[in-house]
Length: 493
Image (cartoon, rainbow, N blue to C red; front, side, top):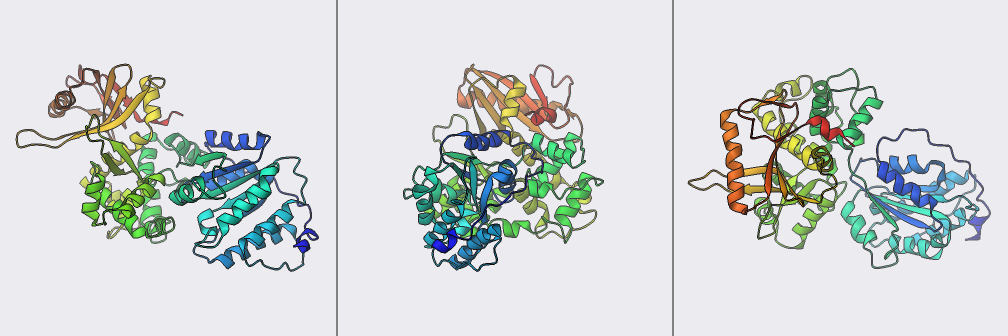
């Protein structure tokens, strides 16, 4: 391998100049990895197009000595060829370097390249889309373990491993029992933008929206930076959704067909679960999912649920005070819900599609569920607005089936606090200030009564309402709604 040592030379790296929105805690973790006195292996995990690569490049910039991205569905030799190409591209020599036939030799070549640097300042090796690099039976993970244990761990270096397949990363790397066992020193599970980060991002692109309109955009495409990049100033939210989701050339017109196969093996299982949950606002238990999808009992179904949850497409919740702690799953990926509700197999497309659909009853049902999902993702902001950020609490839902003599009830969100208080949270999305009717006020009283009877709780119950546009107080809300929050509070950091 000595041929490698004679052709490597020092390279100058340009400084990164892009602006990073949000990601404050993630930036802190990455900067901390640069400041420690020992080698660090950082795992960055997050769904496709959530901004993992941008985050790493922006924070580390010219500290990155080597980076490579796996090629989707490429065999081992193509991955190795690409790996070597990324090295030769940096050394900028006209010499032809022989392509190794295995990953051990490829990583030995990387070591030879890196040893040309004194590493007085901590540098970074960045391996992106690790699950694509580590094709089955390729020996990649063994070679990565060799690289870390025999060389990197002794150097002033950060090795960043990144992947979109969250479950694969956790099983094969984070919880690895082989050469990478307990080698991960820092972990980042990168989430989509919050509402506040979405607002900051769009403002940076000169797109200033009223917050209710921004929430409607978020409910359709979520906080995925790559999706939000398609939003154009000078167009309304309706026009943007039309173009992005319904135009034949829109990025999200058929993104769904690529999304799950890019992340999961046997993705038809995952898609069937997503479709089942899209039709059940109350959520489904594992057994109900199996019955609805006709998936087999056993590990494959459990693995698919786990993979979807770890990747952020679905969320699980325990129902309040259930003796049998059986989780309810619900679809919380905004784009998937929107696509299945309005885009797939629909005749509407192009100019005016969303203008028409947003006037339908289907829109009202969808917007209520989608806004609930947003609130469930912003519970820290809700607790801060309630003044209980420092109080330990557990969040849950409550659902009771109806009987022949009594209607069933559903409570969108319960915040069970250690100070002997439970916030019963009602969530409403409306284009103007919401006004309680006599019938609606009575249904809320019934919810509280049934909840008390079923749970036998002696805690103080505070009926709390979160609305998109505020509450218009009247005789029906007085003495009933004790705390009102608007969408503005969901935008707090």
